[in-house]
Length: 165
Image (cartoon, rainbow, N blue to C red; front, top):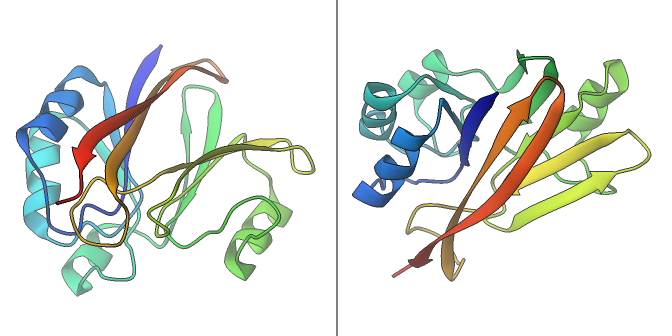
C-alpha cells in the first residue's frame, strides 16, 4: 500500500500544514504550477515527489518535470497533465494520451476546482485536487490524499486547508 498526497497550483506558496500532510504520505504528487523551486525543494526534503510542470512554471521547473507524466504506482497506471480538462471536457492533449492507452487514474490541475469524477467511457477515475496555494479565485485551499493498493484507489479524502486569504 502506498499513501499519496495529491496537490496542485501551489503558486510559490507552501506552509507547515502542507508539509505535515506530506510527511504522513509515502509519495507526494504535484500537478503543476509549483511557482518556485522552493516549493519543490521543501517537498523533496520530506518525501519522493512526482509531478508535471504547469503554465506558470519557469524553464528550470520545466527542465525538472515533464508536461505529461505517465507512471505506475504499484499496479495502478497514472496519467498526469496540468491543463488536462475532465471527463467530457478533455483537452486535445489529454484526448490523445487517453486514446493511445487509457490509464486507471487521470490527474489534472489548473482550474483550482476540486473534482473527483469517474469516466465511464474510458474506464478511469479523474482527480483534480483543487489549489493548495493562495493565488487564484478559489475560496478554500484544498488537496487530496488516498491509498494505492495494487491497482485500487482506496480511502480518498479531501483536505481543506482553510480560506485562500
